[in-house]
Image 1 (cartoon, rainbow, N blue to C red):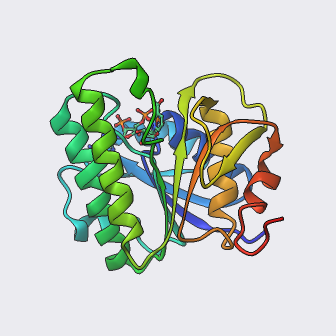
Image 2 (cartoon, rainbow, N blue to C red; image 1 turned 90 degrees about the horizontal axis):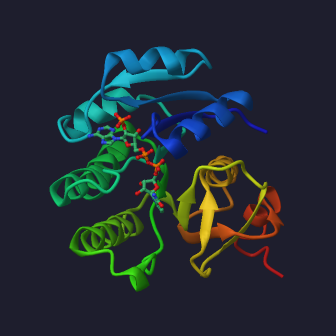
Length: 223
Ligand SMILES: NC(=O)c1ccc[n+]([C@@H]2O[C@H](COP(=O)([O-])OP(=O)(O)OC[C@H]3O[C@@H](n4cnc5c(N)ncnc54)[C@H](OP(=O)(O)O)[C@@H]3O)[C@@H](O)[C@H]2O)c1
């Protein structure tokens, strides 16, 4: 498998951190955006590089310079259910800025972690959650209209538990839940699979081994 140079926005997060470790384990070069210089040491322990910048403060040009000559950008940042302005700034405007930075840096491959549009709608989570869902959908729209080599992955509700190594992955799945570990492994497979391109895929708990689940979504390769 070809070694890649991957830049992760959200590298210190639950999903992003596990993707970074797995990519490094496979021999890829990994760097990512960190808000505080002291976050670099933990990344350095497994050979990933932290580059300092706040997504809400840097310009697209500055972000492009931080990204450098990457083969792919993974966007797994998020405001994490904080206030609506933060959601708009990070999950929405942050994606717009990263798309512009990808163009400026000349990086075509862009994998975005999004969310099921129907996630937890039955629970009436309130206006902040509705805003979050709206902003995430807006980011999907922006990326899908770009001319990048994009992939949008919509994981179900995230769990901090060991990965099963199996998932359900396809253009439309029923929203259940999925471990961050299985999301991370799926993202690593997707980043490495050029046959998955300009597609929206939904991901939840299931019984298909992750490499097979990803391979079965390669266009023209469906049963
Ligand atoms: N929670 C769910 O059930 C669920 C379901 C579906 C999809 N998702 C989506 O999945 C993605 C990953 O979730 P997660 O649980 O891994 O997220 P997380 O652990 O909350 O990580 C969020 C990441 O974003 C970074 N970040 C936040 N604000 C930033 C800023 N201004 N500049 C630079 N980086 C910033 C954080 O950096 P710091 O370490 O500096 O804070 C962290 O690395 C998110 O996009 C989320 O919306 C979540």
